[in-house]
Image 1 (cartoon, rainbow, N blue to C red):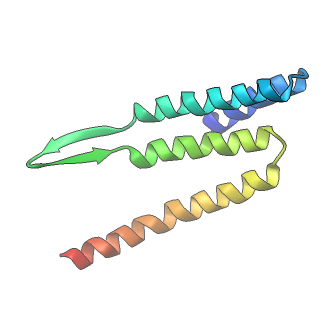
Image 2: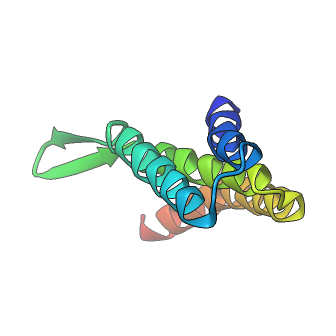
Length: 107
């Protein structure tokens, strides 16, 4: 929630102060790059036996998606933000079940 709120504020403040479109573009690019860097810090690779196990990809993608939803809301695209939130929640609730089913089939 804080990531979405922060991203929305980073977009709202310059917009409300009368910034031009090219300035808004740079703000959005900065938020995207910053959240990407933050998300990269959540990705870890553990060495377990012969194969490495990567953790944190869903967290990183979730952070990026949350920032995108915040940017969308900050730009006044509330319907897009709501639809994106619902799609993200659906994906995050359905995919673990699909992965579990596929893992059972491998065994």
